[in-house]
Length: 222
Image 1 (tube, helix red, strand yellow):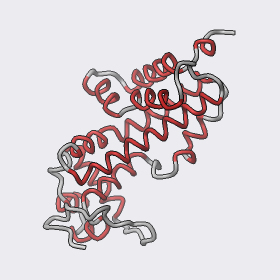
Image 2 (tube, rainbow, N blue to C red):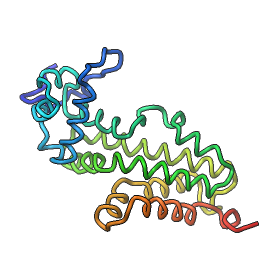
Image 3 (cartoon, rainbow, N blue to C red):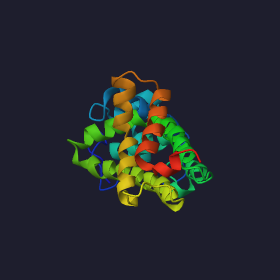
């Protein structure tokens, strides 16, 4: 498949690496791409620059990833540290379901979200900024947001199953509330723009989610 002058223009989805023997340089290429995307943005990062930073031939980058869309997806997956697996099978999902206390559930979720956003929020900002002007990234950005909605719904469903959800909220509405609270842009605005520490964000997320989502009768001492 032709990749354009710099390998930047994708086919519909780019190459799929499943079933291929992974390149020994793949992790180094992905790390270089993540560094450059975060430092320079999507448009200014070329396949050639990634190859140079990784210390490999550009042909190897193009053979492994095909285009920048696929390379950005790989960088997001690496930053998420395992989020390419089905949401319900991730350790955070099992941890969320391991407590019967709705406030503890949301507090554990806040710990997990903070850790994930520390890794992935800068790349998520790159993705959404580029998707506003590059149609090749619209689908990837939509999938990223949809995945966050799936994660939020798992937590909300746990609350609903415990009878802990505020009575005026249904699962869909509550999912949207948690989805918004956990948005990477919210994390970046508070931590980067406003100077909060990640620990402050974690506390705010847990307390705000509890206040907005958990039934008052479940937050009062017995």
